[in-house]
Each structure stands twice: as C-alpha cells, then as structure tokens.
Length: 43
Image (tube, rainbow, N blue to C red; front, side, top):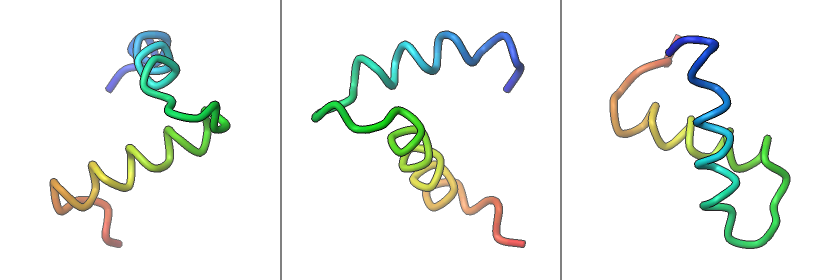
C-alpha cells in the first residue's frame, strides 16, 4: 500500500461506515480482518 492509496481507502471506509463510527475505529477493524484473513502481522 502506498501513501497515495489512503484517500481512496478513507473514502471507501467512510462509505461503508454503518453507524457513524469514528473512521479510525473502522479502519482498525478492517485492518484486523485483513490480518486474520491473510495470516499476516503476528509478530
């Protein structure tokens, strides 16, 4: 992922935000889901 990808990611997260959660919370949840589904980030 590149820094230039973040505006698109944040827009997508904003569009998928099902209850006006804090965007940082939504982003963390998607990241955790990504880690679990792709078995990455367990240091």
